[in-house]
Image 1: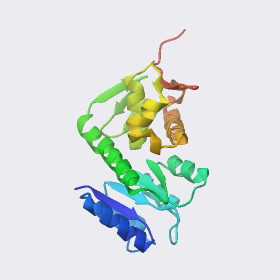
Image 2: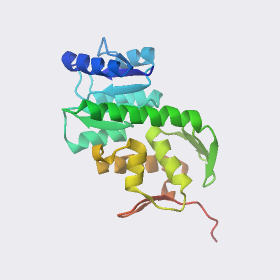
Image 3: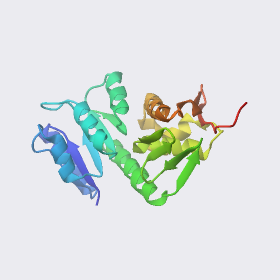
Length: 230
């Protein structure tokens, strides 16, 4: 049974979501003290976190940042705020998805299932190491290492990198990436993919690899393989 942590201060909504998710055999925990969300996160050790933006004391961005500094657990924002910058901010902080309230429960469960299937089944099967542009990609630890050091990637970032590297020197379409990441592109903003790829590229720049992920306008993205040049 997967453990989910629902960080939501609306008691009625929390109880409704908890009841529905429990019917799907998920173990759902809430927050007892919104001043100590991170401490409760470390105690619960959830497999996935669902978090609102507007919360007592500190907002969801604050807690997402704290969680992401210590864990790569999947994070889904669930918020009534509809400004595009909120979605962009959540993705930049390392969230895996953003769902706007009001929402259809079928959409929420579909996204949760897709993330859990991708993250945990994927990690169980893909424990091998890959090399790319002189770097070592560890799909089990979600890390990339070269002479410049080691970076940690989120689940979305490592999955995007895996798809691109598996088809290196070939264009992977935006639609193929969206469907592979989120199963159904109808529920995903095109900007969500852009933010995730840009964040991946920015992380790779720490190792001098950002330039090897190229954008092909109107087509998709391509992971170039480094070649020796004079």
